[in-house]
Amino acid sequence: MQTVKDFFAAIGRGDKEALLALVAEDIEWIIPGRDWPLAGTYRGHAGLADLLETASRSMDTSTKPREFVAQGDRVLVVGFASGKVKATNKLFQDDWIFAITVRDGRLTNIREYIDTQALARAAHPAHVDTRP
Image (cartoon, rainbow, N blue to C red; front, side):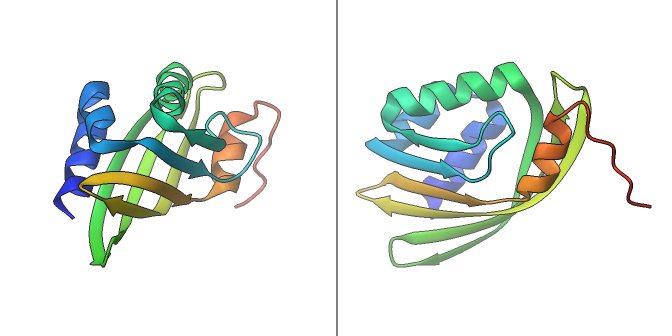
């Protein structure tokens, strides 16, 4: 579990080198959805570097892991993110869960469960939110 905590600490610091050191060469990171900048599947260190660059270029975000639950080689992380999509200047809030697999001390798979609608709304300038 410490490896996963270190991973989130590196995200908070924006420390790309530390992130790359904590993940396997063949890492797979799956971010669901479409119609927002980070949706997709990222593989390997090159894919992770691409994800980090896209995130830096397109969003300002703060990620707060709140709970870590481990069983075997799996760690579930429950957290909250808030931020802004730079292209639209729209804010978002997102309660999320990351399901992470750790093998030999490195993250090998990350699957996010996130509020894809909230992120898509923030990414589209034409969207008008009619909720009260």
